[in-house]
Length: 187
Image 1 (cartoon, rainbow, N blue to C red):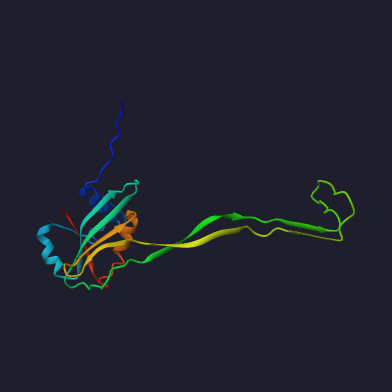
Image 2 (image 1 turned 135 degrees about the vertical axis):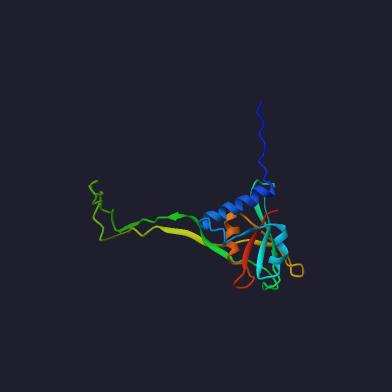
């Protein structure tokens, strides 16, 4: 009998996945996202820096993975009153509709495409319209990520994302000022 085990990610595996993806996107430029250990944490948090303490991948009841990023904010980084990441918008399509309208007045329409002519007198007027295809769609917005916990006093932030790509994109738009540096904590 074959038994299947669900793969679980440890924090180390998740943080390593994040690091590998960051290195791919920066062409292995280690200076963009330096890795520090716990002994260097206090001096770095005295400046205008942000430290990713943990990155966790967890599965929900319905099988969808969620990604949580635990962030510590440096003393010189600007703190907003509330943290909200922007929404991104995309079109959601419901289908396509193609209309063909043909009509004749006082008689049957002629078929001029080689299939013969209709019986009866020729119509006085006829119309045939081929409009373009019409797409039925609407614009849908979703948040890039959600702030699960934000403690301004202890300078901690926990963000939750639907995928790793959103987590990486959020690193460049965190609301902590203009010139902050991001570090990864190797625990």
